[in-house]
Length: 259
Image (cartoon, rainbow, N blue to C red):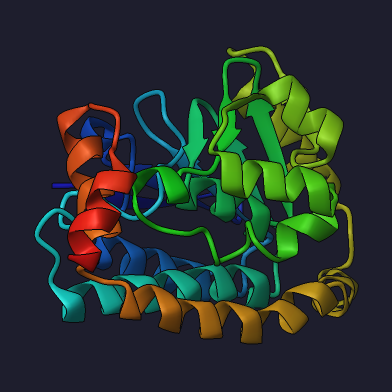
């Protein structure tokens, strides 16, 4: 069972995703806990989101997809959107402190944060079409504003992995630091934030949410499509292949779905 650890240090709320046995993929309760932690941080100087045990976040937990419960998955999908929206709506800067893999919904978590700092060993990428899903909560919409449409499509559709250096070159992260330098780099950013006006930081942040706000209708519509695809052969094959650590056979699944 995973958990979310919340600590306050020097007026900064640190949220640590702690489910290293599944690369910090979050379940419904963990997503709800993160929403509460972000919303409760409105009076803090800043929020830092990070992961425990050598991974950042692998997004929503896939363990239930092999035998999907539509109602439970619907809740996880919609709560994931609420989480990312809470990060965007938070009046304080939110920093993704990435050490290890930011995959799938974890990569979209990076997209949603205001800033991202990564260690050299970190990796980034989407997993949706490879595991029977689609990354509609940032990767197929807002990420194109951050890194360009063709690069965003490459990342969202091809399910490749990218180094921290490449993510920095593309504009997905703000800074890459040595593997033992993440905390020091985050503290340096927090020192700069501490010297700024909270009132005008909030105005600057909320006014910079233009592209996120324009993307939300797209996200909501495509969440509906994901819900309609729950239980499809492509979803089942992707999830079972992922859990069995084998290559999926979507063509065979599609033949079975159409038979």
